[in-house]
Image (cartoon, rainbow, N blue to C red; front, side, top):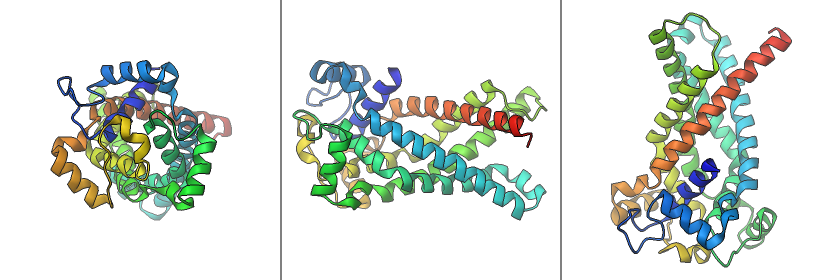
Length: 289
């Protein structure tokens, strides 16, 4: 419940042009608590689950592609480079392979992200009745390639973001093992949760402005459904969106919704790495690799 509330509020904050502050009387949402109360009051509790179905498809497709491609890429690197080099430069290797795997996963899962964003972003009356209707409407009215709106800033964001996640994860593991003087190579659940959460927050802090630009570009051509939430904006591309945000909202506008995003990244990345490490250990045990 908390995770869904944070996720929905994050998207609302990212798309809102008006300032996010409790004294901003002209703003639709003034904070996490206020946004949650508004959503429940105006759209009922079920609205906290808007976009949940495509979000699940997004998570599954993206997660599988990301970790599988990462394992394949790192295995290739281990075979091509010397053991000394890969050991000394492990965070860099993981950053590079993680960035490439993130881009591959993004291309596969981008349509689900666009659908999720639009379902969450729409107000009343709703333009889309559900996931299937949203897909049909976009294909009919805008064409297939509009399912890939915002792909360029997404790739610009995801490459360094996922790379930074894997790189920071290995770096924090080394710090963890050094600080606690751990010599056992087996990664514990606490270690993966803590290091994964720290990696997620660190990576998100680096690339968050590109995430905001991606979301704003994804709702272009969707202005009618956004009118109840504040002033709509038309952007012609990444640079135009960036310059418009800086001009109208200041540098802080690039970090709207950053706090809930940081919380979401800590939870999702920590859990992802914990499950990933545990599944790897189970597979190694089962097949005795």
